[in-house]
Image 1 (spheres, rainbow, N blue to C red):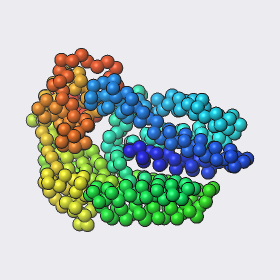
Image 2 (cartoon, rainbow, N blue to C red):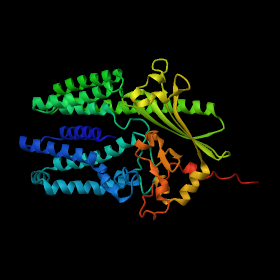
Image 3 (tube, rainbow, N blue to C red):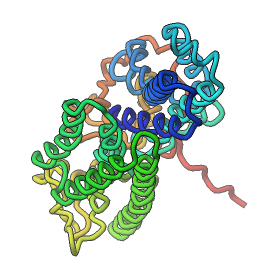
Image 4 (cartoon, helix red, strand yellow):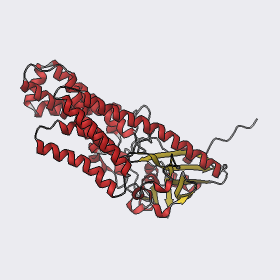
Length: 416
């Protein structure tokens, strides 16, 4: 997820933890504990993304692809990160250190805030089609939620508005509210959000803002409501993702029964459960080929045909409408022999395959088309010919290959 989403969710959860604990004996300690828990949960909710400091270890784009959402995004390595963050707060914040020494509620609140912050970061990153592998090194498979767009304004509104309403200075409060509402408005004007989605976001903002105004400095109603909105949205998106995938699978299998569908990765449009991107991966072992298809599916074509999904995200000029519910944006064919040969002969390309879920080969380049069809603007694109004679990288992370089903021929049936 984007770091604004991580931040507002972390701040709101830190505030909820603070308000759920027994108050400190005086106002000064109470205010200090609040700042401590908000900082702890906010920092833990963003700390794993400091892995961008590791990207220079490998040449582009491998540094980013193999290290972002890498070791710092695992449950095992969350433990030393939490210890490091705790030590930094302890050493650099003397008044907080004194409070932690004297207050059991501050200690338990900080521990809970750190635990929730790191856990929420992994869970939120799981929601989209980029993927995480949280159980490494015990299980190094990529796990994909395929249910929420990687930049989701609903989280900004649901968690950000109650937090903005808590700001005491009116000018700063109104500025934050204007920014939270203004960003989705900008995206709507640019065509990334439909006006109906903006109306829903505005309604959520009004309801949660009014609820927080009534709640006061100790109440938790608005924060619990924000949490319910967030969880409900994720649940709705999870169901919609399953329905969208089912529609894609049925359409593709009907279109070409000879191909074996291996994967259909899904990504919703922002705050729009009716419109979905999909990238399918199919294999035809007898023909020695595989096929990638990128497209859009509408869950309610009678209300919102696929051609009406937001234009700025759908690459409208290249659409090939198959039905009112499904349109193709691109279709790419590849050779299984070429893919497997490159993997065995080019160790840098083999490393790249530890990330790629939808690998498209064209000329001397490879691209994961989940992130766009224009290789010049796709951050995953690698010119594998440039790496052909280079020394292999050391200490390549051992993530499982997302497309091991393409890289390894299926086992032949045993003759009887």
